[in-house]
Length: 442
Image (cartoon, rainbow, N blue to C red):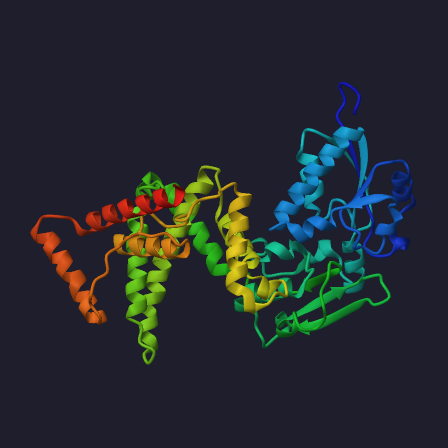
């Protein structure tokens, strides 16, 4: 344990951009000074200079997101530093260049950090590109969050953490509306394995970005220029939502709850616009574009309220759904098979709920605020999946039209008796649901 009155210490060193020739003697001396050593990953050409070290590579395989990996690394290092008093932590490149675990440690008041300088991949990149990053005003961007970090920037940019071809594909997709195929702004430079024997520096078109080589953790890309900034329209729209929230008297008064009515109205209007689409008439798209815009504003509005309250941002919303979709599609992003898609989808959803501590029940996930017909249908579907007996009497009608007529007749009868059919159906569905749950638990 650390001595009384002093904080545990995490000494951090960088392992350079490539082989051991780029690791300084000072770094080697600091490594030798510690008995308890950790490296973020052993998948780095010079990781072997840290003997008897534990790595965090296993976390990259088991965690659902990079944020979870980084948080787990920080917590583990703090625990080990508290246990031993002083530990060493080695990271690829330079400790202060796009190392979120280092930033997390430096912000945490439970430990003190000693950060040693090291050569990073940036110096190698500037050398190969032959540019002065200060004169060129290059922006450094994280490939994982390119769509948000590069918003409003038209270049030049150096994009790091391009560790897989799906990351390159996402970058290409985010930039597709800013690419001008008629000039050099449509080209990008791939920097791969700089300083190693198989180093590659290739200028390619955007269309070939994710088809040129197999990207890994030693891949980055340089974007000299874009014809227009990334996400110009979305950035402008986000700013507009924040401005209205801050300056419009009506917008300023709204809350998450007060906007529910408008959210439902806009959702229904989107559905109407979809139903009105004519495959042979492209002009019918205009109405859908307008209604989707109205619905998007509702989402931005809720994010603007939360951002003003310091709760979450639109970036959190986008990042959350991005991570969820990647996690739920291993057959697309992790080399899995589409043959067991349904089984893997259900397993992933169960794992997500368990991670949240939400063990739920047979009707977990049914939206109680949905319309009564949708609500009843969802409850029946969940009951069938869980083999629960809802004991709903059968109606001897064979044709779909007959069933529709029967539903209409029921609604008409409710009206004659002064009964709200919405309330009536919801109440009986809840009664049957509660009874089914009781029978299952007995």
